[in-house]
Length: 278
Ligand code: ZN
Image (tube, rainbow, N blue to C red):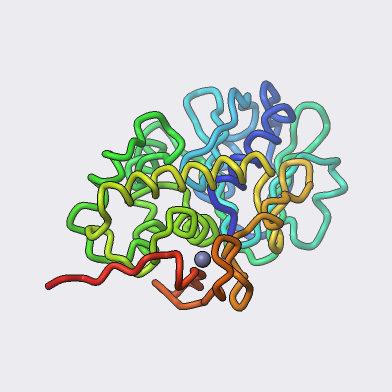
């Protein structure tokens, strides 16, 4: 599933293709479940809207439109968003497309059909913002802000990092990579982290996200940017999906466990286990 770096890459690659363009209408919709409001209402509201800016909140891509509307798109498992010629939207897995005033289309290709497209008014956007924790790359996400979020949290740090209410945008890949970089065992309860470990983790989270953005994200299965190009961050994983391989830091064998129903990869030697004291 695309995480913060992938959605950020899509936003940045779509910006030069979409900014200032006007949406002339709904060109294709064959999976109405992905859309709110209703298709008729959506088609009436979207036509003639100018795209002012392209941004991101958590794992949501946000197209700011005139009239204070926002088109919020979540790629979920397999969504790909790109700008292309109208013929491209005839492909089988394209379930949604918008006509643009330059004759091209904004096309949502989504093999698994978990993607979502919501047209939000100002209140709807505020509600989306409110259910997400701080942006880990924002200036106000400091080590003490992270410490505050982890206070009294007894869940494993790996599970806490995936909680979008706690911190926005981190998914399974970058949670694994950040914990490895910070030398923290994924099962350590959040509240047990020392101030030094929280500093390390804060640095690690930012480092892995920034590195992934610099490499245009990780293309494991379906992820592509707004031009249909793959990212290369998957060539730089230290632990993710590397069970049985040597740890790049200490050569111990990387292990896989399941935490919060997600595959979790770690080095049993250099990621320190903290025992919960009762
Ligand atoms: Zn190691």
